[in-house]
Image (cartoon, rainbow, N blue to C red; front, side, top):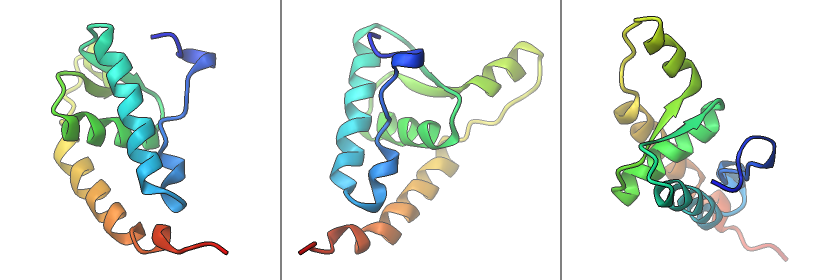
Amino acid sequence: MQHIKENGLCCGLVSAFDSLPTVAHAGSKRVVKAEATGAEYLITNCAGCGSQFNATSCAMQTKVRQKDFTTIVAEGLGIKVEDPTDNVGRFMGAAVEMLKDSTMVKKN
């Protein structure tokens, strides 16, 4: 991907307080770019980005999945790690439900 490491782009989750469509747009753009590389995983080190990319890749039904850096380390050490996808999905769904009215407020 062109935008990685210090040149990485925002996942969009921070926009949740102002614009849920921006969250979806930013997340899907990043997942599409990861998918275009042929990657199996989109690696993150931020819980917010991880939640955003996990939920977005599932919603897009793409083969790219999000994986946290600490999960990779734990797996390398032989530590069993549970797949957080279902929990993340429930959390993100509840967050969207909670924020939907606050992001729809018209600003003068």
